[in-house]
Image 1 (cartoon, rainbow, N blue to C red):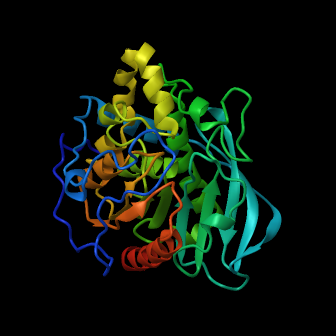
Image 2: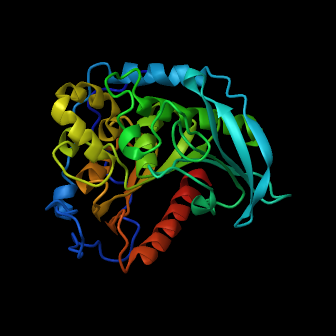
Image 3: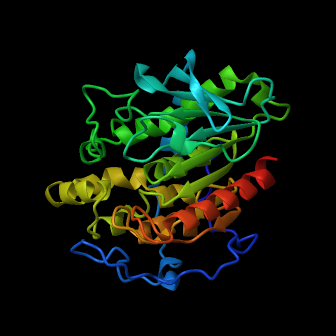
Length: 353
């Protein structure tokens, strides 16, 4: 894959935001935090947050990581059925990834007798993944999916050498761009796609596979980093994505993994040289895959300016679904989630159907 020019200007929005309801203004919820989870930004402010300029070898770095992942023989192994969720059959699965890692997770298949028509890789948040129920049902009927627990996280990919908590995990190997755990987690998503296509060959159609990606929070940031280099993905949906605009994130107090990085930076300022390669907003300037982003106006765990930086930077067709709050329960949480599920279903029907 040839490098894209630096920087890549975003294309105009092909459609207006999906929601018929008015876009919410920055809310002020009663909260226990010693800081403002809206960070003083209005929606207009958030829609102007830029992406940092990429290092000169940004494309080469990620293209090399992608080639390494595609060369892995994932050798997926499927376990016994673990039950059914929302009409889908769920199986334990393990597959190979870079560095000789075996990644655990779940394979989701349609009900017996229903042909596979769509495929998804589904990332998870920094809380890990203990079971697949929260990520089901999948956006489209007749869908198969691989739900990995990326290295060091979840119930199926814990490692003695990798901290299993978000604060420790996000710092693991951060002194080196080659050893930073986030790069390995991105590779785990690429290898998940390879394993899914090995297990469900019906997805590899003439002209190549067209699978979707879903990712929330940590999984949203990983998706933004992974998707620009992998043309097997034809559409993506990112909810409250993390890792956007690290230079700005380092100035913003939060309750999520970004706070661990911010504190580490105080005594290790040189870490900015590594973080430049793992900026989801910078990667989004290379992302031409149609992408629906659901950033929040108020979020104590993932500062909204970083979330919107990912959306603002997208180089391909993009759609926006503004949430009132992320990582924070409020009276409208369930209604907004139902609306997002419906918007997601419509989005993937148009781009994968």
